[in-house]
Image (cartoon, rainbow, N blue to C red):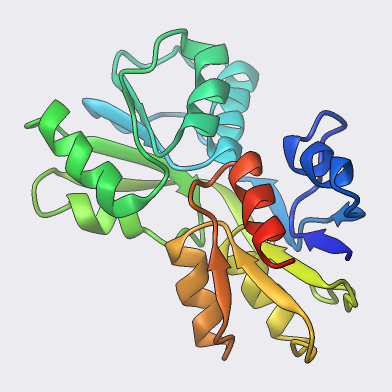
Length: 222
């Protein structure tokens, strides 16, 4: 059984390690091209909320390159993986969600009962979390990088296809069809909904949006 994941895998990838240990060959490639959108000022907000590792890195890279002072705000993230990346820049993270928008929004309301929220994110972000919180908090989408699907994603013959975002799913299925014996894994509910929109009826959703959670979901397909 072979596995493809729509993510470039680091040498110390837990996803790759856990599956190779079980005899599953793994390959990874992002199907989305990311480019920075430079900014010179940061809109004021009480909270700065990141929903991806990429958003954290693009945000702080711009601060360093433009000589912008780190804002005096509280820091929030969608899940634990993003929290680990953010902690490298700010030390303490004030709120860490579950990785899923609905439960994260509910948890955030118990911590921050008021205040404005800035969401530094991709130009083509899904805005699920911002939509959930906007009835209770002033929310602002702050575009800091562009995300475009690759024009010609390679056709995959792997037994399992793992998609890590709605845009990665769209990039692939805009060009290719799922083969009869292939299984599909989604990193979370938002990606699973996007896959359903492309006509994929059988989707295994990771119980948590981490590489370990994705590896566990892949093993369920066997």
